Amino acid sequence: MSGIRIQAVTKRFGATQVLRGVSLDVAAGEFVALVGPSGCGKSTLMRIVAGIEQPDSGRIMIGAGDVTHRRPGERDVAMVFQSYALYPHLTVAENIRVPLALRRLNAWQRLPLLGGLLRGTADAQYLMDQDVRRAAEALGLRALLDRRPAQLSGGQRQRVALARAIVRRPKAFLMDEPLSNLDASLRVQTRREIVEIHRQAGAATLYVTHDQSEALTMADRVAVMQGGELLQVATPEAIYADPQDLRVATFIGSPRINTLPAETGTDGMVRVAGHPVGLWGARPGPLTLAIRPEDLLPAGTGLPARAEALEFLGESLLLHARHEASGTALVLRLPPEMRADLPTSGSLFHLQFDTTRALLFGPEGRRIGATALSAEAALV
Image (cartoon, rainbow, N blue to C red; front, side, top):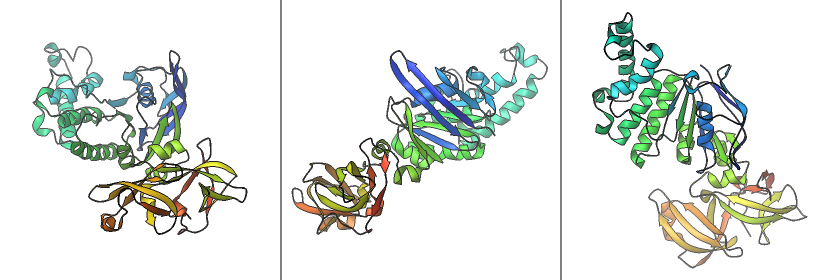
């Protein structure tokens, strides 16, 4: 199997720089999710890999070949679009068969009447029918092969688009927000099917999404993109727990990570509004302290905060509060059994956190080193 290599790709539309020297490798058999906010350049990058757009500079390698200037049909990639891109006048079986017919039949053999009489056409049609049935079976479409797209639900249409992609066994799969048109429950089901299809096919997969939950649950590695550049590429666990850029930390995670203005004094102690927080900083100066909502806890002593609202989510509670000194909004994710002991709206309480899980970022937003005095240290 072949992988995808994106090397220093740039792209500009008029005065707007959309891609800024993006480099990314997707190994054979690997599933990489490219995630970022709308307008960050991820779909443009996907279109360049597919051959729909040309880069201003840089190279695209698929397998051992440079495909930068090849047409889309010469790249041996299958792309699944957000809009499904099904032919409305064709049945499900005919839609799935389209890429096979284009690759296995010549122009004469594809003619509606005459083509079926030519030598070799019948054998090719039989083999294509077998491949179509196998792809349809894998995605639960066997009973729908004679229907047309207008007779299908959104989820069924997406499965047809996926079947059409896998049937030709390409070198690589490119998926551009394929689940964005589905409702929440169907999206969860379909993303499991996509991961299973990827595993069966064994091809390199580049999956574009703005939904971080899709990226974290589906991918082997996650590439976080903002402003036309890749900020970090790592496993889902590392992207969440060990972000190297403040933009990555604040984008990944829901509710988003808490951030507090802090500073490291000449004594090396990190303080928030003058309160030491149980951390030694790498260098003196202003910085940002970031703590995930599940790592903040109400305590008897610590950083003063004022409770604002409580949300019940079933498996957890969200306590919304505000840091007294800076006015910074904070969110705590807590187990539901703590509900009776939580502060009421408007009341003052204190916070503590596990210092080994706290993150520090410098003024430029890059991660900086920190040493925890103890895991149980509270803000005092």
